Length: 251
Image (cartoon, rainbow, N blue to C red; front, top):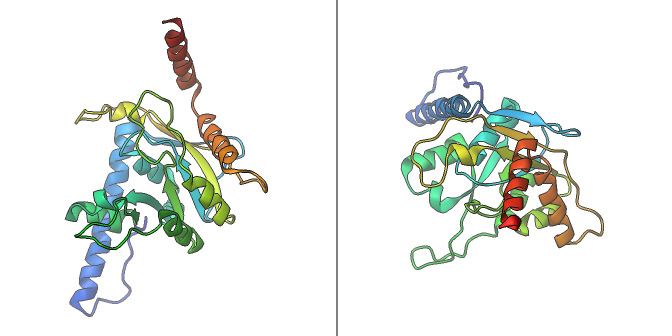
């Protein structure tokens, strides 16, 4: 999806080209509508921590995950020239479940679809290795949005443990920038079990890139990556978490 609606220099000369152009135009309009709605609802803004920068090079943005809208906010805060080349990593079972989701996933977000289910009678082929899929996308020049917790955090914990995929990507794609991200407040905008969102201010906080050390093992790297994300939390959120922990100890 391009920020600037492409205008054909010559009139299309076949029904197939007309359909392609119409689909691209529809994707562009849908993308703008999604971005506008996200900004209207959350007032989302991008904040850069010291040492952080957004660059037009293959980048793996790894963020906390507590809402279905997380990647939308991150995607919406990127500059248009970076957004066009940034693909969320998404579950194929969800985004291919209907024609509308397929259109949004494929045409609007250009999502990298990951199959999460094992082989079945209806789909006998074994699912592709998701890390290999992401490596190929990064090597092809795309940037990716991934959530290393592996699933939405619906618990009271600040974060779930990180899965090993982030470590394998860091090892296999040393050319990619690994940028930690903290998405603030979205869980409160879309609380679990609620159908209507609550208007609240959100932010997407980008940290300085991290690099896998020459002799760093998986556990040490994942612990450092997790801490890089936690360090991006705003002060009021840290104080609230500290207060909750103190109350639990007192009880």
